Amino acid sequence: MVTIRDIAKKMGLSISTVSRALNDNQRISVRTRRQVKEVADQLGYQPNYNARNLTNQEANSVGVIFPVNNRVVDNIFYVGLLRGINQQLNARNYVLAVAVGESADQVLENVKSMINRAQIKRFILLYSHAEDPIIELLKAASVDFVTIGKPAAGQKWPYVDNDNVNAGAAATRYLMNQYGVKQPVFVESTNGWPYEVDRKAGYLKEMALADKRPIVFSIPDDDDGTLTDALIKAHPQMDGVVAIDDYTGLKVYHRFRQLRPKQKIEVIGYNKSLPDELVDQHFHSVDLNPHEMGQSAVQLLFQMQTDRKQYTIVDYTL
Image 1 (tube, rainbow, N blue to C red):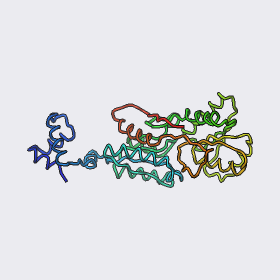
Image 2 (spheres, one colour):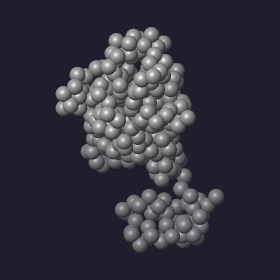
Image 3 (cartoon, one colour):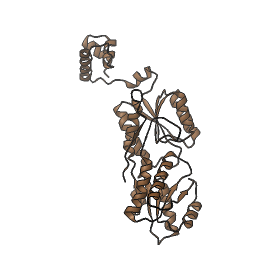
Image 4 (tube, one colour):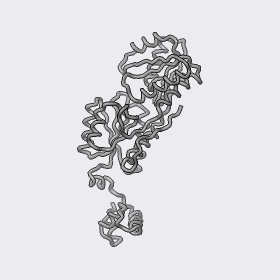
């Protein structure tokens, strides 16, 4: 492996001069910096980014923190996020380190270890939620972090997101205009995620414009189908569903088909996270472009020291 010492010997320069030239130190002339880099390329020199960052007490890793959710591992949406993140990190000679767990406490301990032992100073959270202990830890530790999803009301930090109000309205309008849906219902979880609040706001806005009465189903993640069945039975006029995500939409769709096998219903979800074999022509999904979101998160994270930009909005696709 070629070292700085080899470059210095070939050029008749000191090791410190070569090191400064490779790091674009202004004390070294532009000409010398250029010549050193040319010789480094000729010799096949590969800089040790990890060693250089550890000198500054920072690992060349970015911590990627997953939400506590049993659907994370097999969700195509998160795979798209990771692909975008990894692509941008590779270009910067960084690697990703993953924090994932079956409970918030497990993830919290994982992140503490990343900060204190691994010297990771940059993080991307694949979620944003009010009063989250992990976010509070990152704020207290004075590390840089970006979230996928905008902060809850009253909170502020850099984030990447879609225009979820607009996406909620567009999905509702899509069912009514393209498929003649007369009474779409909105199905949310009971978690209160900021993106759910925004998509519901878009749904409510579009229903008001269409002079239709909105109907909102709030279904907890652990519902065994009993509550979902009761809500469907209580609203015989429903012929469309705007679901907070694809998994929730598929769950409601299956329950509806069991209860009313002869009645047609159109469903639209978000994330484009289901394999084609699980859905049919009556199930639709809004593509949130997770690959681009992941790329944008890394770009925003590395701009924080020089740019005051607080967020990036990525387009969605119907």
